[in-house]
Image 1: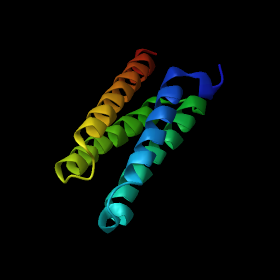
Image 2: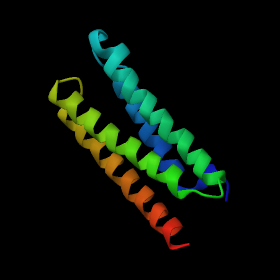
Image 3: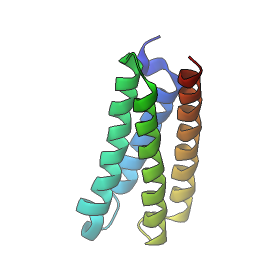
Image 4: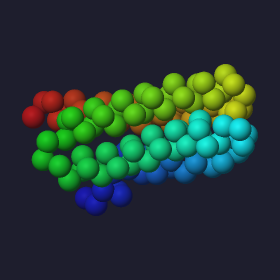
Length: 114
């Protein structure tokens, strides 16, 4: 199965596009700091997913991706608390991050069982 067809890749593609569209709306005063950090972490997750897909030893890479998702959860919560991310947007992002975390957790458990 090509990487782009794996459910986690499809889900993260949608999540990434949503995050990028939301960070573009952050105030200029935080766009080059706060928004860039969120964007960089979200792109790091994509890179780690691709690495894990092709690596022989996937677990460490998947754990790093999971850590990045956790960092994103915290940064998005802070963005909401500071008013950069509206309530509905935050709820949507939080649900997507939670789902990605569950999918990553399942993949990690599968690798640990090997």
